[in-house]
Length: 639
Ligand code: ADP
Image 1 (cartoon, protein in one colour):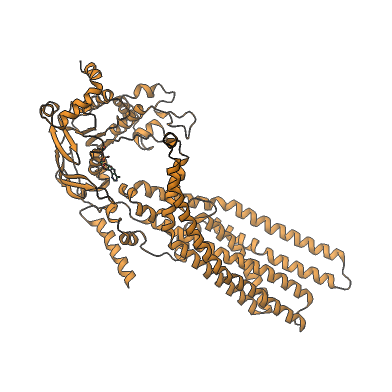
Image 2 (tube, rainbow, N blue to C red; image 1 turned 90 degrees about the vertical axis):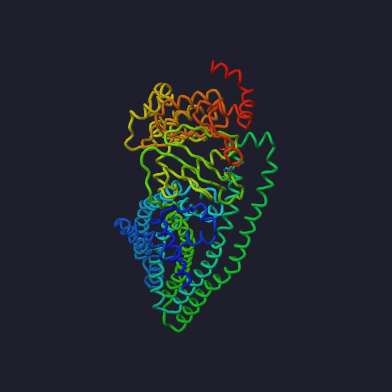
């Protein structure tokens, strides 16, 4: 009953998300462990449920179904052929007039049958291998899509990351997880046919042998299931350790960290942090191995039981004359092969149980609704923005970044947001674009609470040029248009011209169709830091429907004078759009109608540059201090 109630609760939560006026705030809501448990793991997936999901696409492909059956028959029949040839040969040898010709004929027929079956089964297996790989890759692509669309704030929720940390465990390898299970199940078709054929033969002699076989499979499966579930229950713990240790391993070989690591001799500190993680990992594995050791005793006992029952039955039957010597030898071979097949089958079942448990985590992740949908209000025309008593701290941290912030930006206004590094400028942009929601207070867009506007619509209002500019390994046109569909090439060209990058792009042999970066094409274009920033500006300009342009210090790689020049050029090409220029360098934004100075999470001064310079305050102090560093250059530019 309780489980059912929980399911209903979570269903209500999801339903609310669809219909509520406000967007949910998953980055905050999913900090809670219980909530996360209900939200991410709505259902416990039984083995059959998972197999149903796995085999939906397989059953739709008649060719694969036929191949699987064909493989099961041709592979499964092989042990029976061996049993039969043993019987035939022993019988022929026992005849008083044993003729080598007959023996050779029998062996020849066996060899041909064996060759045909194993050739066909091997062809079927290898020809269909890539189909299952394709299914895994499609799952991987779906999971990647989830990562690219899920709420941004969830990336910073480390408990959430630990929780979903196993999403990729079942999708990263040909030989494990989802694909490994497909291959194993394909193989197990053959093993199952062998078990059935040999089991049927042995049942004719004694049902006890087959029963012992069933008992063995049950014991083996239950033991392995116990170990698997135990490991799976502790997966979050394991992931917590491995995610952290993986981070250290990756950084130790990362070229970008190489300089700091050496110059500051950070090796010792690194290892100091890494060693306890390794020890914790080892400790967890010791616990698992110990459990396996204890339980494996049961498996061996069950396996020996089949042999004891079989041998005793056969010896008894041959002694009282129920079976002949040739039948005895054949059945003995059958028992050996039966034990092998049944062990293989039980191992396969256990493997599938284990691997599909982790695929269950992948399904949970892929199917979870990780986008804070909701919101029914729409925005039309030019945009005004108002921050009303906005306070904010990052989910999972108590430090207030913004406190009771009040700010009005009229539609079409060009404002500058300035402040020292760490003042909260980027955080303000993250709140504005809806990447995070205020902890308290509201952001109003044209008077409407931003949390009542659907996230996608909110995103489409903004053209943001972020600080970190990362072109992708696509063509220049695709980077500017942020798509490969229906690219308006003229618009790409115009945007590049406005951003001041056209000359450079036009000089490239393939123009806007040049590939970027070298990781895919050897002749990929590498742009300088400043050029990358211009590319990113072109992307913001290309976007249609943008109402608010935000420049979040994308010019950090340039000097203050160049930054000012770009900001002024940018200002000139924007007509009528609400614009926010962000910088920690006051000289860059002095041309703006209004300058807002942020300090310690609050607005401490605002006005034009001249007004602020007249006030004896932080702006004046900062401007004069910063000015000392580039006064000479500055005089040159403004002269
Ligand atoms: P600015 O853009 O003005 O340089 P930020 O908005 O990036 O400043 O940062 C403001 C404050 O918020 C800083 O104290 C920073 O340490 C903190 N901060 C930034 N990002 C995060 C985060 N993801 N989690 C926790 N604190 C953060």
